[in-house]
Length: 128
Image (spheres, rainbow, N blue to C red):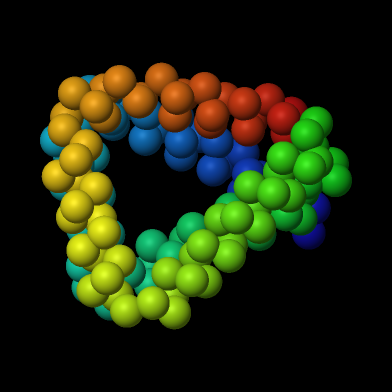
């Protein structure tokens, strides 16, 4: 189980790096993706379940990582917020994503993309 959790966390780090590239080179596409969050039942619950997988991976692998407390806190934060988003009305989640997309103009996506690279790299570094 620990090996599976490790690879899930590594894939999560790679996902964050890929998201950074998307935000840097195709910020309009990243913004459009944000706008879709919670838009349909299928998208909403798929997004939340997919988000719970790395959360559980972080929790399970935390004791083997370089930063156990950070992994545990991040994993539990992601898991609890995912559960909360499952409980609240889907339309509320979608309204929040639409407002966020309105605030985050493409230039802002480009500005925050390095943080996604760094965070994804830090997660991978903490595992290998």
